[in-house]
Image 1 (cartoon, rainbow, N blue to C red):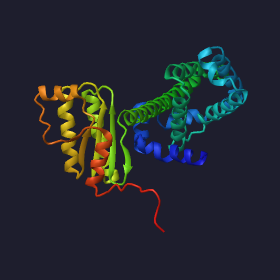
Image 2 (cartoon, rainbow, N blue to C red):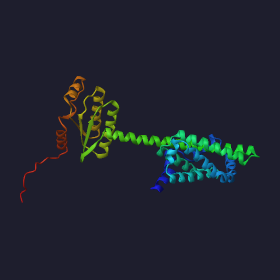
Image 3 (tube, helix red, strand yellow):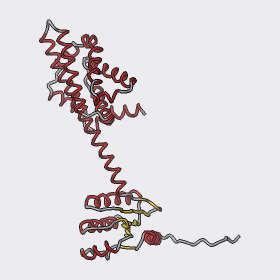
Length: 318
């Protein structure tokens, strides 16, 4: 499972987000991250090794001093693991290899932050503290060469800002994907299409129908007709108290669209109030196959499909 997740982040996620080698190169160019920056960071490698532990310790002391960020590290094992990963990242900043594998790691961080609920405001604030801590160590390490310290810090800042951009983009992408899944789940709950027999679907509609929900009903039904190759649909509106002209016309269009896909729609459960309202609105219902209740509608659907209900007789002849 972990290997599959790693493969998805390393290969599929960059493709989905269109973060390929060309895109990474464009981001580096925009940040003016050049070969001399790579060399400057590689020259900081020994200093990074020396200061890795104190920088990471200082970083997590700061995180644990705020309730909002402390909540993510209550488990000592989790804290130990993320400190180890943070140290690996810190040292990787000076390795000089900032290609697709490096980018995949940044994508993973963004996806993890979205999954655990670490909002960008905390993530960006953490980077601010991180950069300040590193700047102090650079000035300390190159006290006699302030220009070298400043140059290394500028190179580091360019790389860090690229990292931030990738991680935030991934956070947004993952959040939008989560929202789409939630919307799909809500849509399925609000417009359930049930297959009750081969080639026979049931669409029970309950509650208020507005124009938006009417569109969802149409989309859900037509997808289900195609997927199940249904020939008959029973649309039960027993649970619908009121309906306006726009929604009524939309449902009529749904019936027509279903017919174009080869399915007959039977509408059941029209209340007297809804029926009178539709007549008063001038809605032409003559083209719709209506049956009084759900049971009658299913029986009519089975008849259209060629099913025959045979009553059971007591005893069977031997």
